[in-house]
Length: 300
Image (tube, rainbow, N blue to C red; front, side):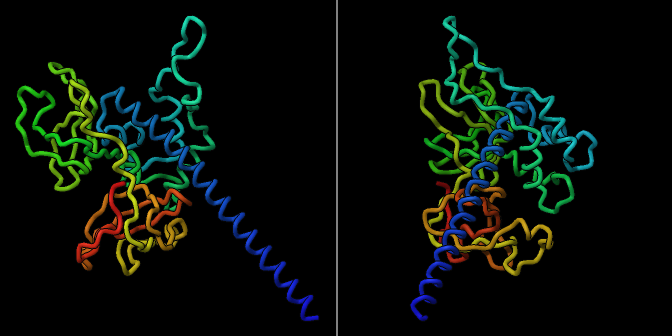
């Protein structure tokens, strides 16, 4: 009898482990799908922004057509239906695309856009608040080679504001635009280290790369906790929003994507960042730097 019971318990344990693995696999797949949708949608938004020479505020205004500081589902879908779209790859004479077909991306469907809106709509109000939308469209770059932040888009008449060190992160505020004389691409940027704004070249006219993508991706350097709120006491987050936020351990080596850049939590002195985990899509707040200087996460 005990032998039968033991075998039965083993079967139950095995079934539970299998069910748990299936749930984790499904969660991972859903996170990957949503990540792909986000990437496609943001790429379209940024292409329209560049084509129309818009700053982030102007881009939001183009989507928020009824000017109520939030983006409804109707506005969201209408924008993607009518926005400027990247031209498809031209055909060569032999009929082959210049671009690898694997690199061609289909525009997100209405169903995918609704799914993205639901993710960004943490309060479940049927719309995306302006602050959330602005955080979604922000683009960060990291300094790959020491360069300078200058006062003007044109290099000739610019004054150097300060040097940018390798590894620093900057937020793209405008551009890239081509500098008329030197013929290099320049962006208006904000240095995240001190908030200073100015112009910086993406690359030099000899091919040196000064800025590269990826400053929004952080790597866990020391085990820490993902929490539901910016404040450590958990206040400031509605019960509705908490349903879409997660609490779990972040392991060393994990990668997360920044949703809200690190800010100081005044009561504790901790630097706190809102992020999305690449492994399972879990979203929440995490400490990047402790009040004694311990680094928990840094730009990958």
